[in-house]
View 1 (cartoon, rainbow, N blue to C red):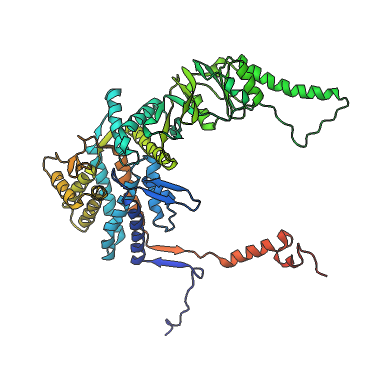
View 2: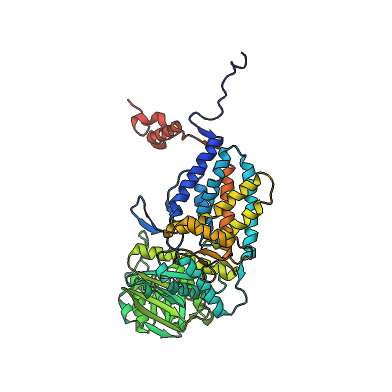
Amino acid sequence: MAAMMQPQIILLKEGTDTSQGKAQLVSNINACTVVADVVRTTLGPRGMDKLIHDDKGNVTISNDGATIMKLLDIVHPAAKILVDIAKSQDSEVGDGTTTVVLLAGEFLKEAKPFIEDGVHPQNLIRSYRTACSLAIEKIKQLAISIEGKSLEEKKHLLAKCAATTLSSKLIGGEKEFFASIVVDAVVAIGNEDRLNMIGIKKVPGGSMRDSFLVDGVAFKKTFSYAGFEQQPKKFLEPKILLLNIELELKSEKENAEIRLSDPSQYQSIVDAEWNIIYDKLDKCVQSGAKVVLSRLAIGDLATQYFADRDIFCAGRVTEEDLQRVAAATGGTVQTSVNNVIDEILGTCEVFEEKQVGNERFNIFSGCPSGRTATIVLRGGADQFIEEAERSLHDAIMIVRRAMKNSAVVAGGGAIDMELSRYLRQHARTIAGKSQLFINSYAKALEVIPRQLCDNAGFDATDVLNKLRQKHALPSGEGAPYGVDINMGGIADSFANFVWEPSVVKINAINAATEAACLILSVDETVKNPKSESAQGEAAASAMGGRGRGGPFRGRGGRGMRRR
């Protein structure tokens, strides 16, 4: 009786939503599966695109997993983990964002029946981690190094990696054309780690084939004043002066006050202002520079002054472009025009202003430092060019990774099938429940080739059976076989040059396993209610008295006493 009379213990604030146990875990798994289903159809060369329309009216068309995940406003706390792994894959490797989300979703889907049957999540997690480390070891064994090849051979191999990445994008039809542009751009920046040294400029109009690579820097003509048209538009081996100062007359501050006893003194003040700017311009001319660029404005007086002396100038150049010009030409950005010496001036072989579509571009080519390149993208609709830029970003990241970690594996689902076969075989050597769990992990890896078939409209069961048979050959000759997207059967991915850097797969499997284990280890969600009373009080104190004497004195308006 005494036990029945015990008072109920209230630990959490009223209205707090708590859910726990098996039901909570299954609900989290279902949420993640729904997210994976959203990006499922975008995988591979025949993947569909998603059109995302946000509340501001912006329309984005994309099939890049990370972009879609960022734009989906996901509120479910467990499903947000999938958004994070897609972002991390994008920033670390650049490609494989859809793969990572699909794998994580599939690992959880395979774990769901075990959870419903009452298996403890920690047993699953342990087995998944074991399977993950086994899979990564196997990838390292299967990877083929492209180290030690000549530059031409390496470029050819890197172009194949870029083409594999681009084949699943909107610009897949021109993948060879863009792959060679991407490889040339990455080779041009060498070992430079900063990605912004490759500039991508978008010019609407023309066809995709009109896109071109500038071995140097190109940027849009900046806002200019009247004398601009009289300036020369082409130089051979010019000296380039980079500034971070204004070259125009400054107006006084509104509250400036000058007291004069004699009206003639006013003229000397005006003259002083003019002398200051003429002195600056003179020093720019004496430096011997033929091209003057500044991050701040270059006024009409300066523009005309330079035009009379056959010097090209451009003001309001963006910070990023100015830094790239500095890196390419070997110049240094100056904050003063005093003591300009030759060492701080940049140079390039050719500077010219060129018409691209209906935009004019300033182009610096043949730069001595050569650690920068610019891709000028052409195309019809704005959304199309935006998507092309995202696709090129992925390809650039992949080529950089392949240059640094020069090992590649067969794409097209080949590596996934080989890992699945290896793990199934390994599972048979294990006694106990973990045999089942590692088997389910192996089955989950087959989602990649299966989805590639589904997206291309092939019979997935038929193709997967052929792949299993080929990969099960004891000689091991079937290892590089993957889905043949063009013919609808299976083909040797290595022979067809469907390659991807091994680091993409390693990262994807690692991140997907970690995410699946993280979601499996959560057994309770606590959601705190928003304190409505606290909000009400805050609103009342803000309304009454406007901060003069708090909410209680607010009746008479601004805390006045009522008579």
